[in-house]
Length: 99
Length: 173
Image: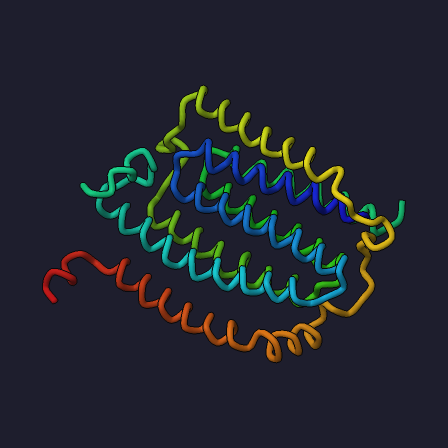
């Protein structure tokens, strides 16, 4: 397969993730769309690693997965805490962090 | 069309349809299941590129650990489609428009990028994605970031526990 096909597929997945972040109000869905965008970038990095013939990009993908796992643990803890306080995961309510 | 191409287009279609299902379905549990299917399609792409280690890690870490965490949080909160807040039609239309505009701009910018045709063939040959080679690179050149990421995990674990603790326990202490 030419590299352009992987480029367009990753771009489409990334754009779908951007659309999801912009159009949903559920904080968990927004968070899942961010994971989708991370995965689109991972796919493109593996394709470029195959194109260049070096393993460094695949190691970076491994580190992206590591950071994403840590990010999800902290982010979901924040969402659960906010849900306990305001009984909602609506980001229009969550924007008033002070109260 | 070779088998490789058929598999590529099938997995691409599956990834795109399931990604659209994530952002379009009203029920959050269905969104999680669509996202798991998307991750399986992306893992299939890794197998096609002979990046077997990343394919397995993607399934174990993303589909196995992270999405189960999402599923548990959604089930704890007892969210359903009726209580789902919706943005107004105008905002949704603007979101789709801006996402599509981003897609078109990036396509237009990258379509003419100078990638030489002879080195841009991605097939399932080569051994750089196997665990032996990745282990050599990871523990020779990237051993310091690897160890730092363990500190990151420790801090994330402690942070999640401190944030997720009940409010009464914190005031008593």
